[in-house]
Image (cartoon, rainbow, N blue to C red; front, side):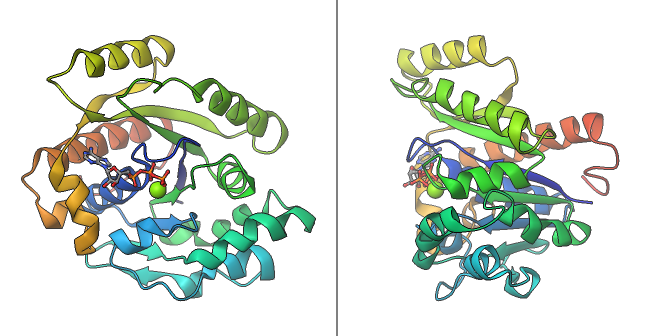
Length: 262
Ligand code: ATP
Ligand code: MG
């Protein structure tokens, strides 16, 4: 049964999509059956994985109760699958408001897919609206990317409170798996200060740190994850390490999770 992990932070441009796509590819390379669900109307994960826009199966599932499995697409990475989206998903944020069980719609759509994958990653939009709340309600765990920049911690309190509210009211399983430091620049004191500060506040910050890397920012325009675009780059290696760290944690804490080759 898949572990469902939401990649969330309401702050924009912190590396959510890059983390979802690169971590997913690194996990697939380790023999995991991985699904990325693009839950952001910007559909950046869809483009980054070379997926076709044009319709949103997630929209149809959230608003029309259509089954999600028909929307699953293979990617150019073996073992890595995608549920693509397109900008029409933005309508769901508004239309969900008036629906019954509006916070549980994504959970209902995702649960039937759990048997087919080991790990399902949900790439969230930069807001704490209903799409993100749906993702947190559907998820077992959440990973929070934090950019190593000034103001990095701003908003994290609000995010932590939202996670707590979801846990209390909607999904008691939800746990913060960890914070991932992204766009780390070893040449600056700022990056090191932010790292220290984040580690002080969140003891479950991953050991692996993602460096700022031009290759990581180039990969999406080629429609392939960094592991295919430049597998030897520092960015690719950092996400490989993160995948190892996550798998080791999952094996230790989630019964039956992340079995198979590594
Ligand atoms: P949004 O909130 O808009 O969904 P996001 O949190 O998903 O953004 P990304 O799209 O992953 O963030 O990253 C923002 C930008 O920074 C992108 O142009 C991406 O290519 C770039 N980027 C992400 N991680 C790195 C990195 N480690 N090094 C260099 N550039 C990066
Ligand atoms: Mg994104």
